[in-house]
Amino acid sequence: MTDMWQGPDAVDQLRREAAKLRKINAALMSRVERSMDQQLNAFSLFETAIALDNKVRDRTHQLREALHSVERANEGLYRAKQQAEAASSLKSSVLISVTHDLLQPLNAARLTLSALTEMMESQEAGVLIDQASRSLVMLEDLLRSLLEIAKLDSGALKPDVRAIALAPLFEQLRNEFEPVAARQGLSLRIRPSQLAVMSDAMMLRRILQNLLANAVRYTRSGGVVIGCRPRSGQICVQVSDTGPGIAQAQQEAIFREFQRGDANAADQAGFGLGLSIVRRFASELGHEVRLSSQLGKGSTFTLELEPADLAEVADEVQEVAPAARHYDYSGLEGAKILLIENDPNGSEAMAALLEGWGCDVATTRSGADALVRLSELGGAPDVVIADLHLDHGESGLSAITDVREHLKLDTPAMIITADYSEQAAKQASLQGLEVLKKPIKPAEMRALLSFLLS
Image (tube, rainbow, N blue to C red; front, side, top):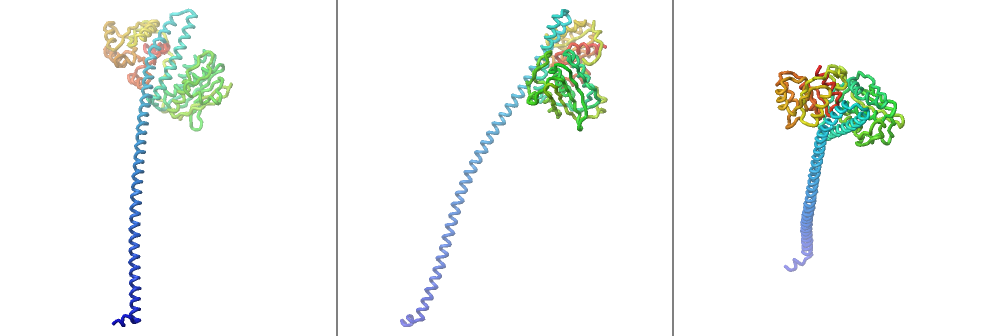
């Protein structure tokens, strides 16, 4: 038995078995090692995932904090924007209200001064009255400019763009500026035109008024020319003067508020708002304003507008200022006027002016007061003059309606107002009433009265 295991074959067999066992062991060890490596890799991935998850949480937290900061900043900006808009709206509302209130005593002063002018006969008194009148005109121009700026800032001034014939507009400007130019020894030429443009009537007229006023104010000799011509599909309205000209470095600055030059010695310098309003109105309407100027040779302002078909305005009634109407100013003597005006100073000044023209004036403060006064007088007035805004929210329009219904007559009437809004003008127009804006120009008042009495 012992010999069998100790033979050569047995030794080989054992060697083979040992080799086989070593292979099996190596294979097992390899599996164990691979398994350990996989476990180590899995653990490493697990640790990495945990670390990444923590980083993601940190970044998410930081992002949320950043978003909250942005939201808080946006809320602060929004509140600041609301406060700024509220402040701007309040500023515009206060400015509109204050300007309206200031126009009331200014109107009384203008009317009182006109009544005084007719009473005074000496040349010295006439000079003083003329100086006071020019100062009041300057104040009126400033208030009107501030009112227009406030309305633009508050969004209360909205353009009503439509076809406008230039000929009637140019005629109005001629009647308004010829006396001013003549007083300063200047010529004013307005070239006739049969063209029409697309614009807002009130804003376009104000633009051209400011350009003409500016040209006349700063021109010492020579004159001013206004005309228009088609060019490159546009209508160019040009206002040229023989004034001192404007340096290139100042040509943009003059369109800013409160920028002004040296005025004609016969006039006072303006407030530097006229060209600012020109630029702002033109921008609101989409019109282009250009300036060409040379020192010592004058300036030309060009307003570019969209053309319109003249036939579109042929049937429209063009607004003509009462001063442009050629009426006989006589015939006011003995005219019975019912005045409805809640401002005592304005009422007294208006009555003095009308009585100076020979009118018989009955002053009242409201529609109800007017009806009582009519019952006392026992007769119908020839004309009713009413302020648009009376006390306690009453409208002069309703007061006129009440008077007409009481008399059962369509009595001629007009509205006077310091309200320059388009809504006020439309309200009066719907009732077929003429409107005079405060401060009232006596010549306009007298012309309109002559027309109504005729």
